[in-house]
Image (cartoon, rainbow, N blue to C red):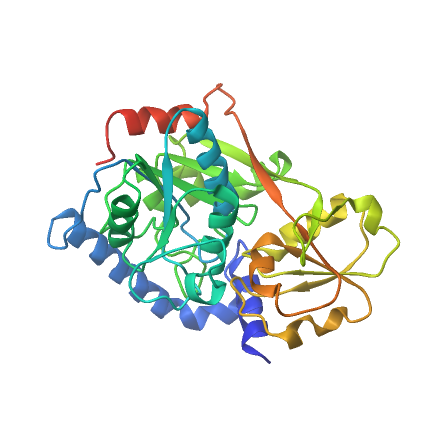
Length: 356
């Protein structure tokens, strides 16, 4: 079994509400990981490990689980909303999957192999400065030095990067929720669920009909009880050609053709569900999140058209000469039942007090 197949299998076991028998041998490692995480957090809280405050407000959009949950569309949504309010945002990221050393600015023509797939997508879509570095404090300092006009920073991921102080924390979950609610490697959690009590808000990247399901685990319900919670919908736009972003088509143009769909995101089924909602018939090929594609990975589409996500597109443009189409999405945030607006909550925080 390939490493990709093993990773997909492991994630499938994590995202069951009950602990799978195959994961029981991993529980001691999970307990050890939890101890290390809690110890590290405690060292930051008591000042043994030092954290740093950047001169502008910092908004962290992250998650407690391994893999993607929809953070990138939410970052793009927030950039647009802050622009409308007169703010001048910049974006920082670790650049996961890239090999960049130190700190690096992300340009439209950067290599995803160097800066990472999500930062490159953010740079192309957001039209704001994007910097990557393993140390997000360094990334933020470099961004502000190069772009002193920026007056707010959005961190793509970084919920666990306690070295960087923040004004706002948004935790994002998709329809899988916290899975079996276990810490790595027996489950998908990077931190205990109680960590959510320190967040500003929770955003669910899921349709309302799944809300009751993903809130089922008692631990998650307790951890998020007092938090503002919002639902995010990803709205599919028209397809654009992988070889020329100016060339567009609709789902109607693709019906009746032999279609192959690929997705290397946190939950590939989200992309396949979007295509199905467009009434397209296709054969699905899931890949692990941040998969490092090679031409052989795309050989399955030799007799048809290839459909992919924007995140995959930044890595695949030079890998195939076959006809391929990319489906961009935009986030829509639904107001909370009590009328609260996520943007209003964020603006209140960055204009006023800072998280302790």
